[in-house]
Amino acid sequence: MSDQSLIRNAGGSVMVGSYEKYLGLFSVVGRSKYYTFRGIKERVWRKVTNWKNSFLSAAGKEILIKVVLQAVPTYTMSVFLFPKRLCTELNSLLAKFWWGNQKNRKWINWGSWDRLGQQKHKGGIVFRNIEYFNLALLAKQGWRILSNPTSLVAQIHKQKYYKDSSYLEAKLGSSPLFIWKSIWKASEIVKDGMSFRVQSPIKRLHKEAMVKELIVEEEKKWNEELIREIFVENEVEQILSLPLSKMESEDKLVWGPSNPIRANFQ
Image (cartoon, rainbow, N blue to C red; front, side, top):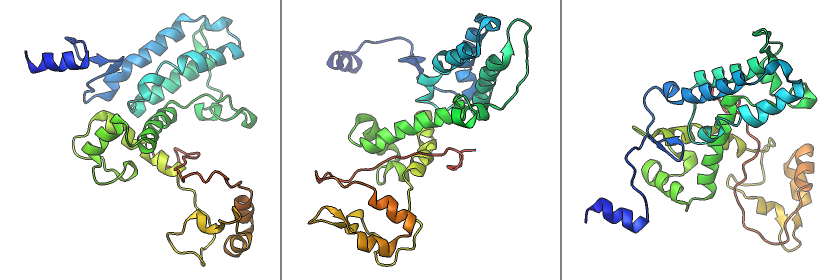
């Protein structure tokens, strides 16, 4: 029995003759990333051209964009980094659908897509910017690697790309797989979300001081006197407003809000 047959029998897997796609995703991405993923743009375009846009209300268009059109590339974007050209063209298609009228094929762009992506209380409609959404999904994969280091995918990436360091310290490496290149590119978003730092000059604490040094362990409460000596007033109030756990839980990493522009992805 061949090695291939032994592996197939042991894993209960099924042999296939074509490896172009696996679970709906490309198993091999060529040099032209735009050519590889342009089929997603065509899928969005087909949906847009099939809808009777002239009979849709603004609320109807909003729902179709958020629920249908923006969902088309989501699965692929959670694994691969799209070319900026493709992201720009997808944003443009969504904008044309929002502002356009299928009856006369004319449209006027009355506002930028980024402006429409703002929260509603700021005058936007919360439409997603495809490029930033792509990065956010990839950053989520990086966070999973960081928070679940024993998972199979985390161990594979570690052995191949950052054997003696961590995901946040990893280098791109030579001839990396496009999947790793995509996740690595989004690591700056994770770093940005974990980089909360106080602004006060720390005088009484050493450089590697931990939060527990600001807590009265016996009473399970903040050492308010020490905190007021170290931090400025607004930081003092923020710290003292945080409730302390009575369960003595272990410390863990936290990924807070990230800004793709501040993280320098342009």
